[in-house]
Image 1 (cartoon, rainbow, N blue to C red):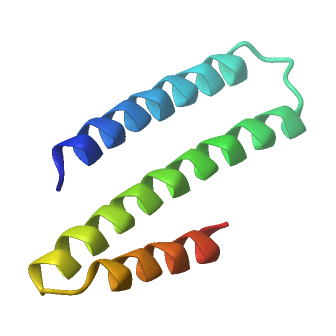
Image 2: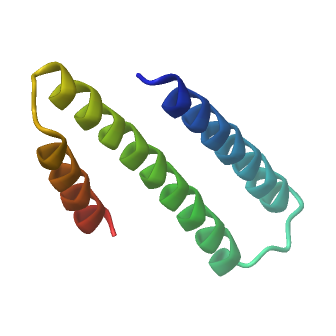
Length: 86
């Protein structure tokens, strides 16, 4: 894993961790609407999906480069990933 990716993933994971703690406090506090909890957990899922996308792109860049793929092929694969995950 590239160092820049590692730092980005750790930063994103810490953000998700804080978000989860916030939702837990919201639920523990009681008197919270189900829709508010669902909205927040969906935001957490979206953040995790973005982390997976970052990891997948890094994997493609690293693995394709190791296997001798052209820069053009790597760019095309990254574009395909972007289209699928949006």
